[in-house]
Image 1 (cartoon, rainbow, N blue to C red):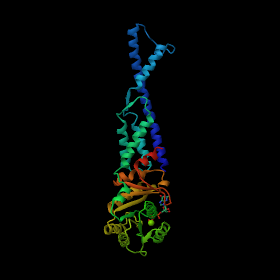
Image 2: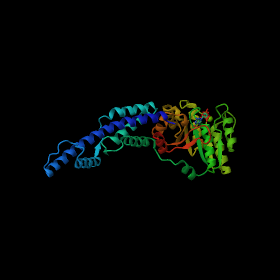
Image 3: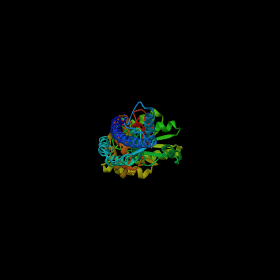
Image 4: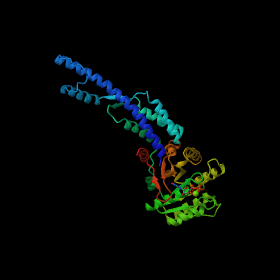
Amino acid sequence: MFDKLKQKLGGFKKALGSVLESKEKEAIKTEVQGKIEESLKVQETSTAEKVSPLIQEKAPEKVGIIGKIKAAVFEQEFIIGDSGLKDHLWELEMALLESDVALPVAEKIVESVKIELVGTRRKIGSDTGKIVEEALRKSILKVISVESFDFDAFVKKTPKPVSIVFVGVNGTGKTTTVAKMADRFKAQGYSIVIAAGDTFRAGAIEQIDRHAETLGIKIIKHQEGADPAAIIYDAIQFAKAKHKDIVLADTAGRLHTNINLMDQLKKVCRVNNPSLIIFVDEAIAGNDAVERAKMFNDAVPFHGSILTKADADSKGGAAISISYTTGKPIMFLGIGQTYKDLVKFEPQWLIDRLFE
Ligand SMILES: Nc1nc2c(ncn2[C@@H]2O[C@H](COP(=O)(O)OP(=O)(O)OP(=O)(O)O)[C@@H](O)[C@H]2O)c(=O)[nH]1
Ligand SMILES: [Mg+2]
């Protein structure tokens, strides 16, 4: 997962780390020089004896002096300046764009890395690679943590039934995600109803029906071509009557540019006023996923997104950009094709994956 991005961030860390290291060495040299001169002066006045070469290795009192100087130098700090960083920051921006990070997000990260580093004081002797990694971690964390949303706490406290409608373009993994979520809720002890809201694609009802049967979950379905708003409405009424906790509503994949189908989706949400609308897209779609998310969010403002197929995504661009761009959190990541391949998304988890 995110292998290419990991590699690029690692490359940046190494390159910028060595720039900082040479700056640190310069600072050490200047400090040592200064301290030696200082201590020689002190010696001159106290012993009235000229101590000439800087390092006379055999003389024990001189070794002592060098040791003290080193200790004094390592207590000092050096300031990270602007020079030498510019090219590397440019390379970082290029690396992020190549990884499908959206332009405003890449710019924000680079700006933040710069602020984290330039003008800051660091102790001489610090691990420069770590300094760069810390700056990267903080900067990426800022763009992916838009709003803290505790999914499980929300479901727990919301009056039942909690209804969740899954929306997105074709083939992104909506139906599979409905099944994964059903499995997850079931394991948490909730009672569930699935609404077969994709009446558009041939075979869609049979597909979700199979999942419901495998998972042993009640499904509300009508015939192909029926009104999805009505099916989801029926599922919610059923859940109310039978005291079920959760309604999970599948919908047909649709292009954000198809006005009629987007109008239909608006109707689904207007009629049913679901507790949550979740946008599902595939991580591997990169920037396309981010663009589609914006369009879906304009049509049916959603509460958060789920990125599927993260297991096949080496770039990580969508995972980094989608929250910042939509202002809505990523709730889960799909990481495979089985029911268990769904992980609750935590910004810190992603950051740790990028630097492990
Ligand atoms: N590797 C991987 N494959 C996934 C993941 N989620 C879904 N898939 C696969 O993606 C394909 C499409 O999944 P569906 O759930 O049918 O997608 P959909 O969005 O419902 O598709 P439409 O109903 O046609 O719009 C299937 O082969 C799934 O097994 C995931 O997290 N990882
Ligand atoms: Mg589907």
